[in-house]
Image (cartoon, rainbow, N blue to C red; front, side, top):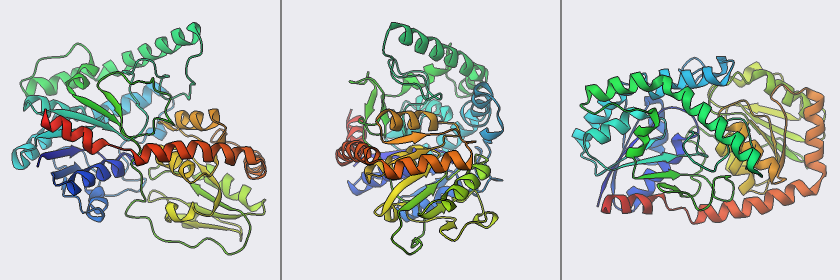
Length: 418
């Protein structure tokens, strides 16, 4: 039996996959402990995963828009988004995250530390204790350190020629340079831990013996085979603990499910346009707002139900279309059910996920500020043209095969054995 300490933060869709990996390890007889924000304790309890909350590091006790500390929707350019990540998650609180991680290491005595890829503090803590470190990314890789992958954030397709490869390299290097603004804070944390200074912020990731991409190889644009220490381990997806059973409106009309993030991204106006578009079509609509937004603030036509949560796993069995911001889980789960998507990405990894869907013919992409009429027209196409569903079924079958072969627990067991 080995002992695994997992560290993550309330950043939305990456929490549940980490909990599922921890549950798999526990089912194989290992001891696990997840260190995260207090608001994630119910999700851990639902999966019977031992949990400990951050105390010194920043943490959230709730999941509403007021609780969100990143507030990246307020940033008006990519550099400002990166600066918020550095100041509020990656580098600014690195020492606080490290102190909490060190306390958990002393109390739990793990053999391996597994960290979410943005938490530099726990990585430094593992290094200070000379413990094997793995990173677990529950999405496509988001940092400019994976050669051969399209730059993150803008929805770029794989490079098709030397000119595009050169452009990708330039964008990647620019992004890498932007992140160096966090290096002084990270090095200050490392000095307090008795560690030497780094010349590049991303050298902290070099401590990791394995970087697990908990996404589908069939969905990703990453190079194949992946360079070490990267490895695809398959998607880990499930309904969160706060999802509730919900019966869609009665009738035989096509069912359209709408989901726009468990985090706040100022998505109210986009949701209103989508709800109005559903009202123009002969469909049944179910709109889930998640914990960040009160569904009572939306006026809905008779054929549309707006609720805080519903089991997407249950709704997708009958869905004809899924409308989403295209977060990782919200992109893959409909595909795995063979359901085409209408994507209106708002930032983060969403443009990249939407590009992967549209490139495979499994959906369409619109800007988040698209009008009601444009959204309704896109919905009609997706419902009327069978090629979209056929492409979603093909891609979904490949993703399901990757899910069936998922092996994060095995990779982590090998790391402990080494």
